Image (cartoon, rainbow, N blue to C red; front, side):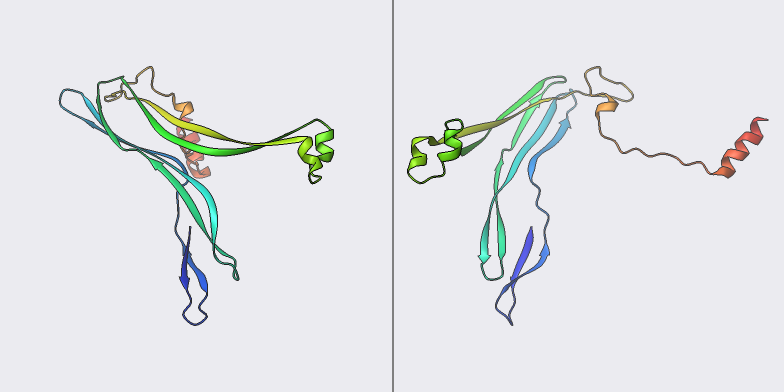
Length: 176
């Protein structure tokens, strides 16, 4: 997101830098395990959307983004392998639709007044709710739980060890 400051000599707004702004869905999870293996989970889902750009200075074309943020914060105590359900992050949009008669509506819908006979505009409200299901499993040591994600489904950066020709030739000599 750009940082704006007014230039004292020109009086105009100028971009002086940028701050990062996370968009999309962010889920912060902090588990705490007590002595009797009960799990206290701090959950904070957050959804950030870019709504529009507002014009700050029309002459220089400087605009500022306007964001919408929905969030929740909760703490839940559960036992191993139980599932947490979080809902209530509801978004409501107005959706404009335009329907027209096949072919005739395509040709005549843009003609003033006449187009109204062959097309229809409607605005509907659309509600969207984001729901999280989180299952917590305790893992100890090298134990692998059957329901845990498999390593091929988890992103992990691939690092490869490059062997130099010297190491390869020494290894061959040792095997002879």
